[in-house]
Length: 128
View 1 (cartoon, rainbow, N blue to C red):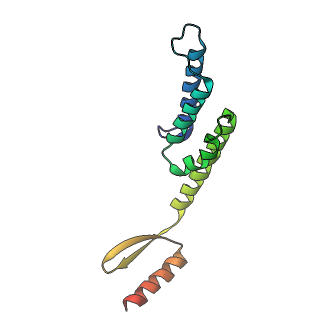
View 2: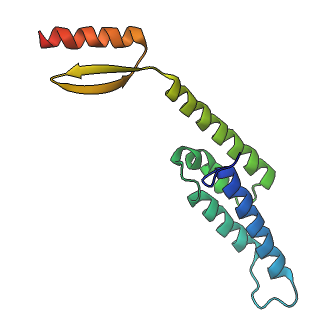
View 3: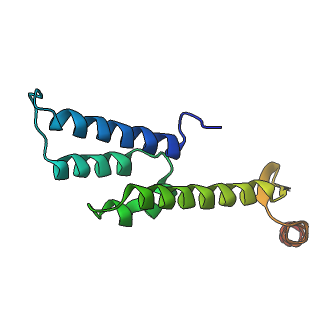
């Protein structure tokens, strides 16, 4: 299921738009003629600034610098970056949250139960 902010959907739409511009520019009746290299550079810049997630953009930057990157390679790298980021987010969400109360303020801390107990014991010892 694709959502509006999905980087893969964005990439497919950008690829489609680039293709339409290339076809329109190649037609004899076209008033505007664009160089294929210029269209590719604009496409790469658009893809670089498109995804909302900075970690995905960072993983794609080396491929965005190569004007001769193949669409298939780019799609594969994007899928790998999205998969990696999804796994990272899933792991972060699965970590239990420990609640600590210090000076009347409650704080949530990502930790395992052993770490939370040790941290809680340390805080309590510091308060005493």
